[in-house]
Length: 207
Image 1: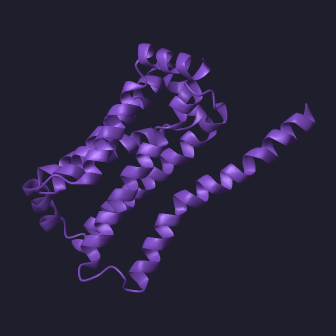
Image 2: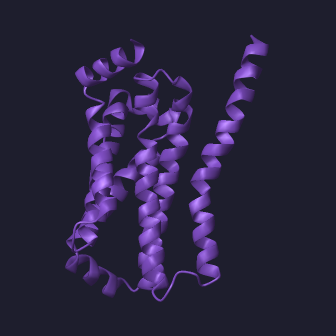
């Protein structure tokens, strides 16, 4: 038993380093680009856009462990679901802080007016509120305390993904590739949770 546990742990360590390293890399690169003034003529806007894109990508990646475990049988993927979700929230919070702090200097009057004048921000804020709720309850104590409600609450992560995608797409005045890809990914990740589709995919992979 001890040898088996040690073997499983040693095999998972490289994946742990890869997952955490890949999740932290965009933040490190963005910090370097800010410090070294490599974000072009609109550094604030570019930093805000990049952090938002990273948050959305991380959120989509955080939705993968469930289908990988249930459909493909890769149970080890589940151990990364919580950290990936926390990274998604971290990037979303960074996105908000860059917008409110760097762009608006936390001037609440101007910030409130900007939010009122920009409906797309409401979608982003709603996604952030959901991620905050999921982050606060992503522990065993909350699972025991909430019982069945915990599972229902954490299913809202798909809604957060949809709202974040809407927020991202709404920023642009014309159709862009990234929002289309994000919308397709959210739709696909929602479809594979449908029991019949999940069963079909599982049977196809096992055949």
